[in-house]
Image 1 (cartoon, one colour):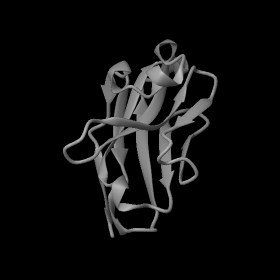
Image 2 (tube, helix red, strand yellow):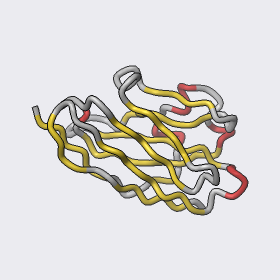
Image 3 (cartoon, helix red, strand yellow):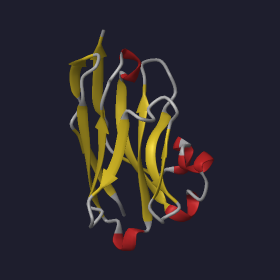
Image 4 (cartoon, helix red, strand yellow):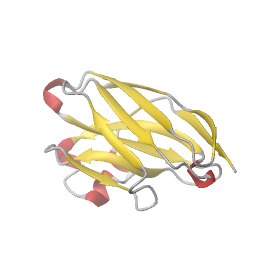
Length: 129
């Protein structure tokens, strides 16, 4: 069973940067693919960035391409999200999540919250204008 613990959120002005971390345990043999999701106030949860297909492929939401970078350590014990050039629309609760890689064979599946069965507790990101 995978356990996830995300951290690193905070409040910064627009144009600033934040780095999120997610401690991952139980991902034996890299069976699970991991990613970041966010849920803005009053809106549905959406995929931000993630690894999928189990071959190191990454995907990003159009709204964060060029500004956010996802990475993980070599042993896959931690997942990171570097967020630069933040804008107020990035304000949300951010979650790391894990799903069996065989369930993330395309970007539609990888970006869908319904694909994922393990979640971190969430970390709040607030961007002021």
